[in-house]
Amino acid sequence: MPIDNAIESCSRQNRLDTRTPNLETLAASRQELERRVSELLEMNLSLARKLSRRSLKCYSPNVRAACESRGEARAHSDASSDLKSCNEALELIIRYKDTEIKNLTENNRSREVDIFQLREEVYTTRKENQTKEASQQKAIKKLELKNSALRSSVDFYETHVDNMKQQVKDLKCSAAKAASKAEEEKERAEAQLKVGKMKQEVALQKIIELEIKLWNATSESHRLREHNSTRNDIIDQLAQQVNDLRRESIRLSKVEDDVQTVQQRSSESNLDNSGSARNGSLVRNLSFLLDQKTQSLKDIQSECDEARKEVRRYRKKNNQLHGVLSKGINEYNCLLNAYKKRILRQPQSAARVVRTFFANSAR
Image 1 (cartoon, helix red, strand yellow):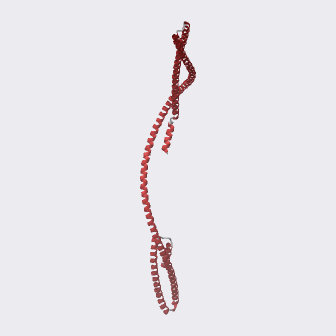
Image 2 (image 1 turned 90 degrees about the vertical axis):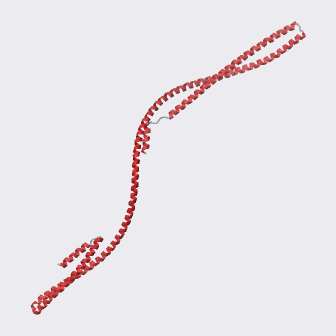
Image 3 (image 1 turned 135 degrees about the vertical axis):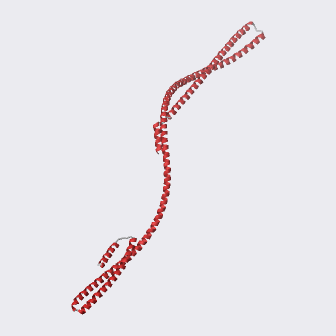
């Protein structure tokens, strides 16, 4: 019975040891196996000693009894057969235990190999863990640095976001103010546009009046030019007449000289009364012609003076008309330029201003 219990405990221990233990369980199982082997060896030795003693005890009284009585030979043979069977069973148990011990030693060796491999794996894993821990420490330091940088950046961005929120509030207030200002400017611009339209209408009316004046002035200037051309023709004719009269006066002066010479000759030669009468009539005729010449020269001179005055008056009027015409043209150009500038400077609507402002702030 104790042998069966030992076999069962060994088989149970083998079943337990066939699992995949870790390093500590393998070391503990190795120590347990060594202890169990030593116990089994001691148990085998004690069982062998007990069987030998029992066999000797059983054999010696049976031999004595056989010597005393032959009737007890069967009991002796039965005892010997029992002893043989016990010896055979003991040998079987010993063989089983030997095979078990061999298996245990082989298992122990394989476990030692496994332990060595596990130690190497543990050493490599420790090295890997150390390298991993070092890399993890480095990574942790880097992450701490990054976290500190991120915290500082987060703080900076939080302050920046707060500033941006404040700026957005300020921008909204300024946008509302700008919208109100834009509305006021729009109303002002509309009022200015109305005033500008009224001024434009007045300017157009002035332009029309100036155009009418310009047309009248141009027609008057054309008329004056035509009149001046006719006056110039008249002046040329008068100048020709003056030249003719001058030639006639020169001729008459020559005649007077001739008359004076004749008078001198008549006074010197004491001509008769008939010659003196003829000379007197000739002198009267010449004096009449001289008076007519002087009168005609005066008339021509007065007409020339009047013509010159008329020409001066027409030139003055023409210059005045040209001044009025240039002034009207300048006013017309100024009004056109002002109207063009007012059209080009149209005020932008408040809605467009606010829309562009919020679009830029969103970007």
